[in-house]
Length: 166
Image (cartoon, rainbow, N blue to C red; front, side):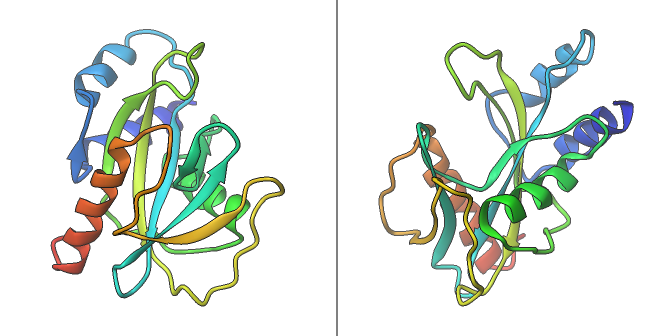
């Protein structure tokens, strides 16, 4: 468990962007028993024009991701979730894209989430989870999702990668 917390704190501290006052939330959260963390991957193509998303049954289009199991690091969870939800194995960029705090359901407490980035060729075959299709969407396209602010956050990060800032 301590490995999970230590890795989350380290990655949160070096994330390229912080949203939702996540640093302050995390500092207060470590003073009490923590709920599980979340991790996701913002996957773009080498041309930086598309993002790989999964169609979640109630959250809409979202990046591949999910809960960090105790004993695994958020980075390990992101890699695992990406594979489970899309069939893709990818190397994540060394610097996390973002850290945020959000509730994934109205009846759940807020969770610290770490977002990572990866670049994958769009010709890579997808093997989505049953009932949760995965697809490449243009970054110029509007997509419906539970967290509408993610569209601009992902677009900004991908543009930074394209400009060599990531």
